Amino acid sequence: MRTMLYVTTFLGLIGLAFWAYRENYQTQAALDHVADLHGDIADARARLAILKAEWAYLNRPDRLRELSEINFERLGLLPMRPEQFGKVDQVSFPHVPLVVTDAIEVTSANAAAADEELWP
Image: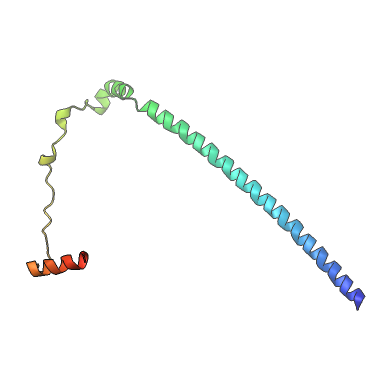
């Protein structure tokens, strides 16, 4: 009986060692994957910074003005002037009618009671 207990304990120990070995390698693989993802994110941020710098360089006002002058016959672009912009009072906003759904009657007695509830 004692031999059976020793064998069972030994097999359990081997099983736990195998489980710990597998878990260790899975953890290491997950950590390597996370490190790779962090590297990919850093590369993507660097590429994004470069693209933003290129976009700012290509959208310089003097460059765009020169391109519009070069391609005026084909595009027909004119420079913008302040008088081309409208004023706020020239914009026609849609009229939204005010609809009261639940009317509340307010009298001095109701107002005094409401004040007493708020400020005891």
